Length: 449
Image 1 (spheres, rainbow, N blue to C red):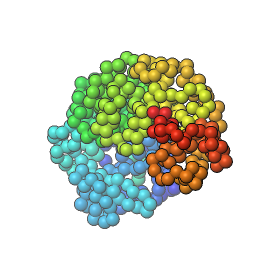
Image 2 (image 1 turned 120 degrees about the vertical axis):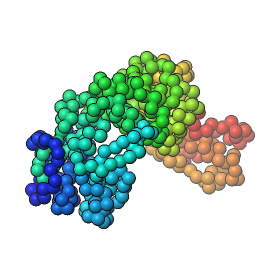
Image 3 (image 1 turned 135 degrees about the vertical axis):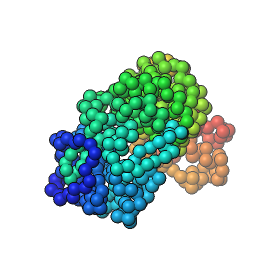
Image 4 (image 1 turned 180 degrees about the vertical axis):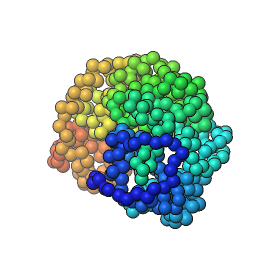
């Protein structure tokens, strides 16, 4: 991105003592788009103050150009909507609008203070403020409580967020018990930030850790879909296993899943083996001591999307149902599990090695052989079925119906097992199998379940 030398209008000064921009933040400011400059200048010319806040400042301090840039201003929402008539009132009750400028959208929020968090999530009253100091004091963590005055090239960091960024510490602004009582979702956000931007797990500040452990029961009152949104981000982190370990230590997962996880020691030992798992497989490992039906119920209660639920159902259906090391069975298993075959086998390894459940007679070392066998397989010559129903009716004189469908499925399975690529090869197999007199309900299906 080209560095732009732009003319900024000076808006109102903040009521905080600032400091010069760090080198990383200075580089970020130099690269800001002209569309943002236009918004900041318009607010400033209306006698308003305008500051960049939140995650954009945090990421810029880490040397990462942020995906989204948020603005805080002392102008009230009604005034902002007058200045920017095309803005979207995305959260007007909390002073937030989305300003469109060129191809960009900037979430812009009026400085505010909040009171009476009766539901442990949202304030019952919101008061507009002109004080940047007061606005930053209501934020969750020190690393999210910094602001930039772009025109003056000043950084405001009243809670030493830069120091906590350097030390990779998640610390509340003010009293952690109060911050959590205001919004219980902050507990999950704290864990999510333990995996922020890197391959090294961050640490919870000691008082925050105590506050989370003492208040984790409040998670049960949160909307289930919001819990899953945060949990998915945690499980997708590059240090997910380390974060889950800390969550197990603090008993927070019992409240997330609304059930007792009574094999915590085994799970914590297993986490070192879970590095290759994606978020879905890791979730199933965490819940592996529950009956399959209950696992599905828990996932449904968290409002997982249907796509994820289908994958989890398939994982559980195939749990313990593994192929031999014969190439035909390996091909079939790979085809049926598609791109998730390796996740399934890694999951099988983990639950056996760590005695998380007892499924099937195949041991750990046999699964290693299965993985190695599939890795040596060549891609299938034809993944889609070679024949169709019309061809099969002509070849067998069978009418449409269940018998024809089951024979077609059987031939598809044989095509996969033997890696066939031509109709001639399928026809040769059709001549060899006993399909004329047998009960079609006993014919092999395209499945290992």
